[in-house]
Length: 630
Image 1 (cartoon, rainbow, N blue to C red):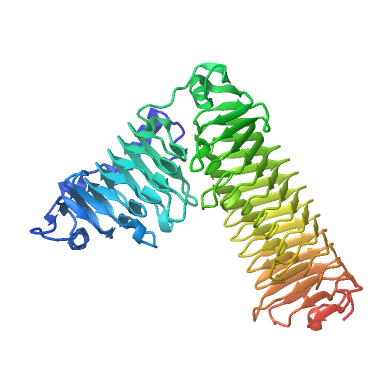
Image 2 (tube, rainbow, N blue to C red; image 1 turned 90 degrees about the vertical axis):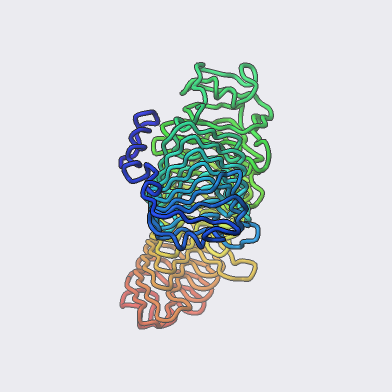
């Protein structure tokens, strides 16, 4: 199926018809029923629902009589099955979530097709219902209440999508997980769903979230849904407003002033036309913003106009849907579970200019200063992200394009920036400093470009790239970080050039203190840097790595200038070392282990004044003309 290009009726009909074509029209299980199996405490075919599911054959209907069933259900490798309760006010499936340490959904559907679930109250599950790698699902006329993590999760778990129709369900009061994370009412994660006539309210996080899983975007269609009073925002992700029974008003005014023309900023959002401007006076504005249209919101300056979330468990600003251009400028955003959540489709454009995002989160997972999902473009300019609690000051997941310019990310109570997935981040003329963990941490297929910036005084690595991340670090100062200025592992590939990498130090246990550490299948080109005064190694490479080290000035490090090899046995390190000046390090200029898989090439190095020797370790590994004497 093609990605929807419009949010209106034609796109909605196209997705609905396409999903129906995949077998989601509903009813095949009931039409093809061969047997009716009954479940109740006494006098039925089965006393537990799970026993009936296990015994069911294609086409069967399981009828569940009134009562409370304290069990969780797994429907796996089934087809053409209907599970029908006597009504959501009469049949309760109690998943006992607070007694579970593992994530145990009330109903788990896996590797199945044409499954119908109707007429239940489902409560206390860690996920009320979870479906993956299953098609033709119909979830209808149920009540999902007080579940943890997600009420309904139609997800790409194990990398496999699901497709479902959700009809006339009530999803109410979904709670954050036991560790404080999540809390979405309905989460469509790399999968497809049609929603008709559902009510989603009181969620600890988003009411409806639609987002990426790896290469696969989530997609939804439908109409007539009531989605309200959700603390993380009602709609999160690339969600068409046509889903709603009452979409927010488009507005007609070019310019709205707060409080002169509208009492609140959200009221102004309803009154301003798409593409218009809201001007917000100085002072404290206590509210949540839900932005689903193109708009500029301009405060009196980040030190003067303060937007504070209604409470510490609310997201202060939620920006969603697709095709919108949003500019926030001259504001401070504070006091929320998240400060700003940005989750748009590929045509979304969001700019934060002169924005402070500070003191959001209470330390639980999912609580960050700025959370970026989706595929859109985000620019952060002349802004500060500081003092936020949770896993990061800025956290990005999915495939967004992010530019950070002339900004500061500092004093966050975990990492400064975290990237996961296929995010593309370009940082220029910015400072990432004094964060409690890594300054910048990136993994999987992320792309990072860091230029003319300062990464300093972070309480773990200045920059940590792993998991196939790609990056360029150039023209920057990387100083006084803990354990390593730059740490590379798990197949990361990075170009490091024209930087000053200095005085990085060990942790409280005395471990590490390297300028650059390359390990675990990582590859690095290290060129024309000044690497000096680090507590341990200037450059270390070990454990199945490939490095090219050319034209660097490496001096006055606490142990070796360059160290090839480490603790693992039978390492395979390919090192090209040429045209470097390696001087006055406290132990060796260049040291290598004797492992037969270590291969060193290169020539023309100037290696002098190192206290324990210019070349150390297995001297036979250094080729003629390498430099430093043998």
